[in-house]
Every structure is written in C-alpha cells, then in structure tokens.
Length: 79
Image (cartoon, rainbow, N blue to C red; front, side, top):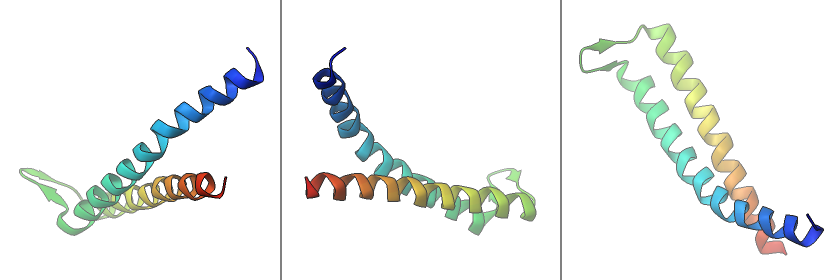
C-alpha cells in the first residue's frame, strides 16, 4: 500500500471519527451527570460510592473524547 493510499484512508477515518468523538463525549458527560445526580433508575438503586465512581469516570471519559474531537477539528483548520 502506498503512502498516498494510507494518507487518504486516515483522512476518511478522521472525518468519521471526529463527529463521533464529539457526540459520544457529550453523551458520556450527560449520562455521567445523571448517574451522579439521581443514583437510581426506575427500580434499580445504585450505592452512592458506585454512583460517584461510575459517574465520575463517565464524565472524565466524555470530556477526554470531546477534547480529542475538538483537537482534531482545530488541527484540520490549521492545515
């Protein structure tokens, strides 16, 4: 596989991955915040310690994915 083919393949992956990172980042932050605030979903009760750990990890992971998406957008604008 030539360098040009690899470059084109990476561009097409980046074009799909950037919006996915932004969308999933927002989704994880929202769901993590809901877990932190409510700690129960219908009949399912989540212990406070588990809710804080799970919600915190989801918020941090969502922020990281959103940051990666923004970083890709800003790098593409510079080119």
